[in-house]
Length: 629
Image 1 (cartoon, helix red, strand yellow):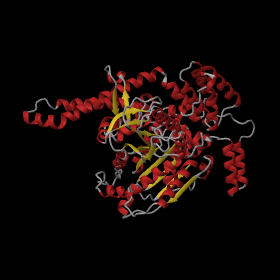
Image 2 (cartoon, helix red, strand yellow; image 1 turned 60 degrees about the vertical axis):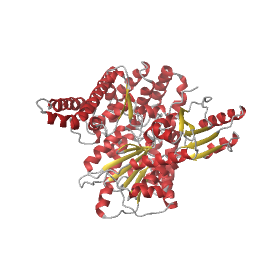
Image 3 (cartoon, helix red, strand yellow; image 1 turned 180 degrees about the vertical axis):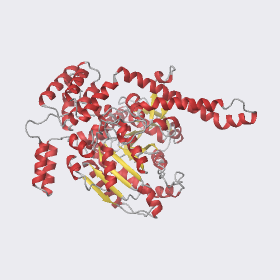
Image 4 (cartoon, one colour; image 1 turned 90 degrees about the vertical axis):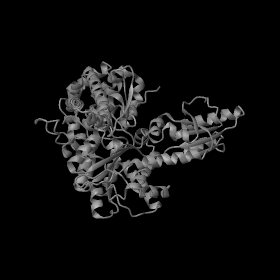
């Protein structure tokens, strides 16, 4: 594998006509090519015709790496989705491409044992991705088929979704790690970082905050020490690792940048969205890739929704002007126009009408939900004003059964911004919620409490106050240990104190012009600067955590800053220093990506976002639901 990496590295990289004002991003096509080549190699280990069973949530990522025709070229006969029922395949060779889940492995055992009982001989191969866990082998052994199957690992860690977004496509990372305390995916994150380091490193500086980030960093360092070191010209300078539980407020807020809204309403999956008949103005749905290749989308994706209609209508006028150019052309000019411009204009016209349709659909849905009133409540919660009115709004939302997920989201936002609810409010809101949506949500409330998302304030002195007194009394390692002990007893949010320290809520007395954003708060209509992005900005500005001790204490610590190796010649090194890789462990929202793009433009640098999965408020809450009785 390392030899393969070396050969691919020697090939010229088309993405590097490095400009002095703004650095060019590395070319991540290499990641796709490596993944595809390794998958083909694994399929060829089972020579001859075979049927391939693919786990449902691997279908979209696989489509981005190797399409059906590529698989057919390597003797894959039929493709099936894993459906946990008896199979209909008649092939003598079965290949299973799956995540390392016990349920799926048990189903494969059932398939093999059913064949045995029927006296049928087949060859079975299981390809685990991104890695195989010990528990999978244990199940194969327990079911008595470990000798009948061959197993392999497809190290498909990273899927580039766009020029600056790479996803591990592991939505379960969030629940497994932060709720269940299952750290098996930490090594996967470390391996993903190791792959990026071996292709685009060495990194000059690594910063991070959060327990999981620290473990992922340590896992990566172990892998670096085990492997060989080679002096290379770095393409990525700095790396910032951040845990999702450092900032829950940002993903719980309603998204108002265009890409975020499209994700909230139409659900973007692997950078692809399906627009229904209400958008396409026809009777069929259309799947559209949403990335920088779509020129219309690329110009509006980071815009506040209030600016998008104006932009699209201007774009439509420009397009009409370009079409009108044909009038009065002679034959030679017309020929040039048809061969060079017309195809591009038609494509742009198609995309423009789709995005206008999407905007209209968003407007209809949001007007129906009384979106303005919802945003006003969220802004009040973030600012800490009119809390009683906000509670009344949430009660009405629950009692009218507007949306089970939305009601929970607002309850969590209220709890985090207020550092917990008053006992009487907590009991009353919980009772109303259970009456509206069913008592089977009791387990969900337990999950939310465990994560510190929806908690009751302790009567009398809260633990955070005790913790700060302890911190002042003893200023050595014991204080750190005591502080850790307190924070694990009650996951307190400290949002108000953090908001004041980092100035997260801009002064509301001055007008905020969303057409000309002055800071990252524009992604939430000027009401709130995302905490995650503010931390990144502050740490990069200070080149570490110095001066942010109070902030890290409020965030329960686990921060680190490590200097790595230095790159080659200074010109390339300076360009690489302005490429910053931010890794979100537990998911990241499109709003945060928009904020980081804005920060990059302001600072003359570029951010690459690596995330375990793209998340939003619905996905975050849905991952914590436990309403199956």
